[in-house]
Amino acid sequence: MQNNEMTMSEVLRDPMIRQMLRADRVSLSDFAMLLKKTARARHAASATESVVPLIPPVFMERPSASVEAGL
Image 1: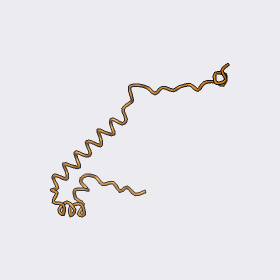
Image 2: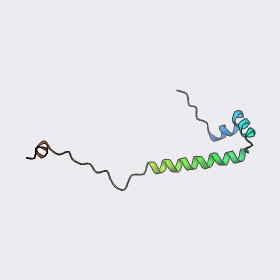
Image 3: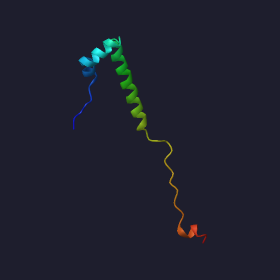
Image 4: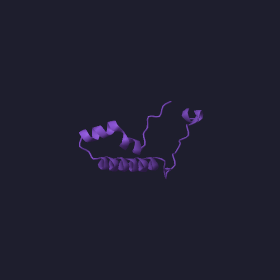
């Protein structure tokens, strides 16, 4: 399987991305700051997703057949 992910330095050196930045009048330094800010936000979000909840899940036992029958 092919890995299509690029490092931040590869993104900043990519000729097609640089051409789009020029066309959109976005400076390379502004784009680099945006990438860093987004990477930090994603890292923080993924760190909070792996936090163990303070309240453990509660499992209800299924009533036995005798309870369901009213015995």
